Length: 138
Image 1 (cartoon, one colour):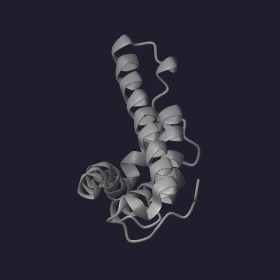
Image 2 (spheres, one colour):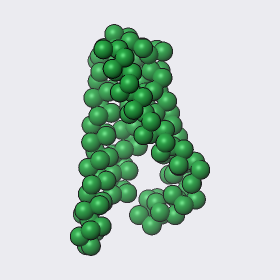
Image 3 (cartoon, rainbow, N blue to C red):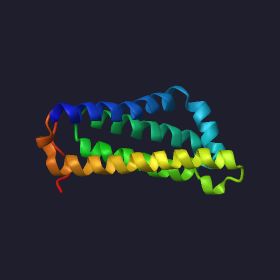
Image 4 (cartoon, one colour):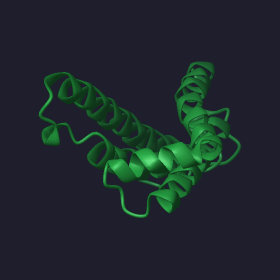
């Protein structure tokens, strides 16, 4: 069981760590797109979201307060879904469909991160193969 959870954490975290890398290496392009989408202070928002992705992804991957890391990912995912993928604002059917897919992806990932938060904060060290126990206990 512990190995299965570790593999799941690795696969889950890889998505966010790759995205964090993009936030730092393509910051200018991402800030331009975020500005186009109406994100306030796009340069700072891209940098801050990259930090959330990196910290949350590493936390889940390494099992260092992975419950907190899961919450950090939720803090990124829900605003990203609402600000970057506002499908309800689109009039072009193809663009609307693509934004709806991305919105649903982000909300689904936020739901998975919420479940991880619950698992880590409830089971803690019983999940095994983590470097620390949970920060929160529910």
